[in-house]
Length: 228
Image (tube, rainbow, N blue to C red; front, side, top):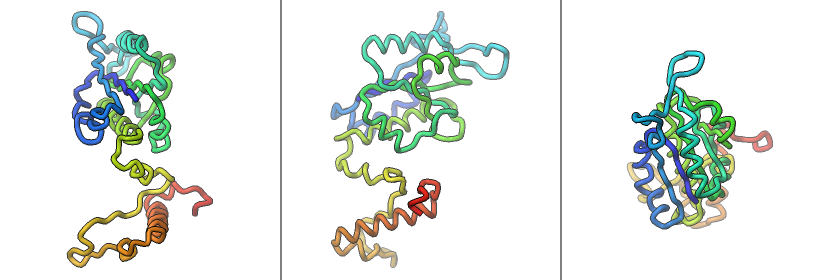
């Protein structure tokens, strides 16, 4: 998998991809992540990438030319399965979307900034618009890092135990059950006895019941009518 991310401030994402699971995924050659500075394609001696809105109004708008020129240069080298724009009014990102995107080979992500991008980029270039929540950030960089993390960890070989991702919250429209580790008792707080007995079918049934219980309590919206 290759992920190209276009940003007015790409350094905001450098740390996210330079550590832990995302770094190991790149070191193993399983994923490539390339950050592109949009200002390198800016216009004029000041490398301008934004301008005032037609019709007036507060806030600057990211211009068509720098974005289009950079994307077209990248498309000369490869075809993209998805061209994603990170925006608060996009489709809400969820585990199902992460699963779908993890099957792609080449993904391009455009980070919004200022008041957003010229609508013509959204109308004619972008294939999918994604939001990570109903709130506004200073730019799409943190959101792009979140989406990339969720996708990359699903790529086969990235996690040490590939079954780990399958038991994450939301994979079956359920939240994850409680987890415990050693010691079995501390300060009088005990690990549930069923987890210590070694009866794995019973343990799995307990985990499924707990996952359903927690989901009903915390996120009943995730449950379909026939699951209640």
